[in-house]
Amino acid sequence: MKPQSRRAAATAVVAPAGGATRAPRCHRARIRRRTAVGVPALVMLAVGLWGLDRGGMWRDEAVSLQVGRRTVPQIWLLLHDVDAVHGLYYLLVHAVLAVHPGEVVLRLPSVCAAAVTAALVAALGTRLARPRVGLWAGLLYAVAPMAGHYAQEGRSYALVAAGATGATLLFVQAVQRGSSRSWAAYGAVLGLTCWLHEFAVLLLCAHAVSLALGRVGGRTWRGWGCAASAVLVSLVPMVLVSRGQAAQVAWLRRPTAVTAEELLRGFLGPSGAVYAVCLGLASVGLVGLFGRRGEITLVGVALPLTVVPPVVLMLASQASPLFVDRYVLYALSGAPLLVAAGAERVAGMVARPAGDGRFRRHPMSQSRLVTLTGVLAIALAFLHQLPVLRADRNPGTRPDDLGAVSRVTARELMPGDAVLFLPAHARNVALTYPGAFRGARDVVLVEGAAGSGTLYGREAGPREVRRRLERLDRVWVVADPSLLAGRWSPRRPTERAKLAVLQAEFAGREQVRRGGMVVRLYVRKPMRPRH
Image 1 (tube, rainbow, N blue to C red):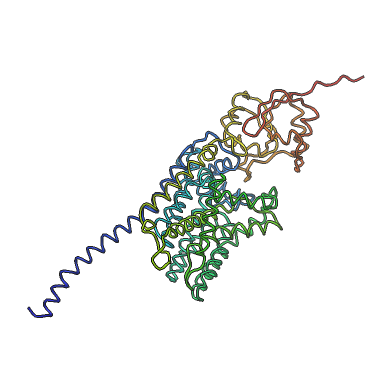
Image 2 (cartoon, rainbow, N blue to C red; image 1 turned 60 degrees about the vertical axis):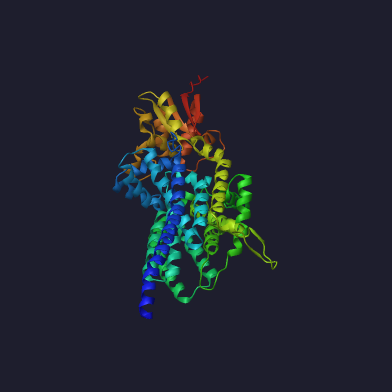
């Protein structure tokens, strides 16, 4: 056989063997990546479904339910008056509740969105580091009490977190690929997320910081700038309308250092031990902040995502209070990535002295044992925080429990009884649980909520309120207990008229306090004889 023939034969024998070796490796790598992404999603789904039927809703969830049950024209009419920032979410809820108009169904989109977010967090860690970092980060997100809390809220915040985390993953892909299609996908997802809640636009600030930390080139900046400009332009109508509805957040106060500390504990863990460990690991992870020029790192993405949106909103709130922790829930996605990056660095530091006095990685740091050790540590953190998660399934831990209030009224009210809501937003319980008020007369209501394009309906003016109450000898009042106790005074003249007539002409009798509200019977005082 000629030399060329022998070499060709050798090549024919060796090549398939080499290909066969690489194929199983690629297959195993795909399995590791899919496991790293899939397991956190399943854990988050289980945590979200656990205790989903709490048997009651609080006021914001109740608004989602009663608005979602309206027709599309009625929702559109409402958005001209209030809640324009939640308009897209209400339309989504309307479609979901068409399947079954109940509180469990209302919460299912949030549960699914939280599971998607956990998977996306894991995908970010896997892409920017390695599968076990992604697995750890995704699991940390899944067991975080703050993530579990909003996974069971019938509001938009879990969906915003999913959209923002997805946009961040697309941002990373766009930076790495540099294609116009990648930047267009990033802009589209982030724009849609901002229409779910406009404060998601602060994610642009976080991504700009990531680009600066990565010292990327002009082409990357131009691609990001075009996508960011498209997002901002698309958001202009929302901003113009929501500015006219700013009175809805007049109750907010300026954030303080205590606010910032509470948010940090929400991100890293409310319990002392978990918080301390996660804070330490996140600090270790900061060592990997900078990579090669033109390359963004895991920490370079995670740190701005965690810090920039809350800080920007807190600073802006010093001039005009706008900060609530749920408005920046999406920033939580960065914290598990920081902790996982620190844990990976600690694993890499498990070393032993080499012969020349330098340190080298211990073989164990590359083994499955390290991965399983991290998973076990997260499981212990979950068990440590289990009382917090369990307490969160109790509707009494929310600001109010309209389900409990409805059960009281269903027991106390008789057909034909008059009922007064003080203030007007207390009517939320009747709109959400109308069966409990069947047959009762709403004393001061002029036009229903859906028909008037308002959240709670239109009430009569002060003079008409007094005239209607003068006809009554007894009236059931569903009220804010702080208002009845005089701890705050209503601003609206109608509310002041209700309160003044009750105090001057009626005496309170039976009182039941449930779910953060008071249900009380008022009976007209006997007229004093004239002398």
